[in-house]
Length: 327
Image 1 (tube, rainbow, N blue to C red):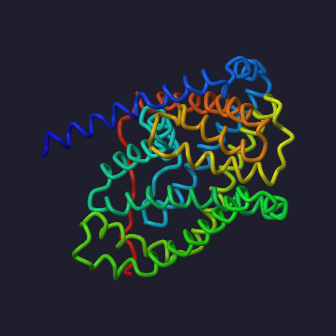
Image 2 (image 1 turned 90 degrees about the vertical axis):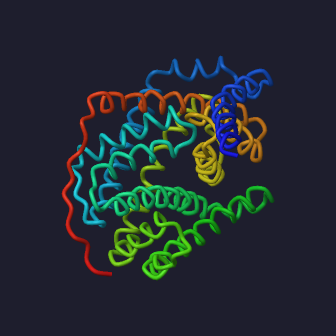
């Protein structure tokens, strides 16, 4: 049985490693991705440089958000080190399928440095990911709301829009509920110890509830930077006349798909997602959307590889902790 599990895991890793390039090649072969346009978009150095600048600001913002969540757990990590770990996380997002590989690396480093407070550190990573997703859904819901009557004319965009709003409401509700009942749930011996430890740490965020909307707002701003960078890429591909309501519905959904751990950096998967989503609104913009995402993806990869500057000389981190208040 153990050998079978190992073999299944190996097959899974193999598929994740090669699925992305295969999908990418198929997109090119089928005409859904135009590499000439991608090269053309990259050659617009002013636009590409603007994308790089915006995407460089993004990890600085997300590092501040994580630091805020650590502070709520009574863990003090200098911002410089939080930013360094964030850049290392971006590096491993490129090397490991999906956008969660970096979280695993950040979690490994921060928990290794925390003696007796590992669950609190791990909870900050979990909350960082959850609030990042809620910020993305919140940005989409807020930006598309003024144009929702137009989106409702298309059954597909109406369903997607309602799904975004529903996901945001359910996510916020579950977050409140779990934060409120975390201490009680942590007493359930049927749950794994790691889960109970995380649940025991969650009430810190419920007690300091003001940090939640702040973190979600910071997340929305971070994702707005990514959306603007993608818009710059899309404009260079001739797809800039997409309605803003549709744009802020489709781009966040596309970014969510690329976070699914299927291929490193979302290669292939992202191109298919953006092609399919924009095809719903306008078939003429679908190829441009996939091309634009490829340019956007290249900029993200270049910045993420900059994490090597923090990873290679990494010598560990120093944190200060305070005993958390009684729940």
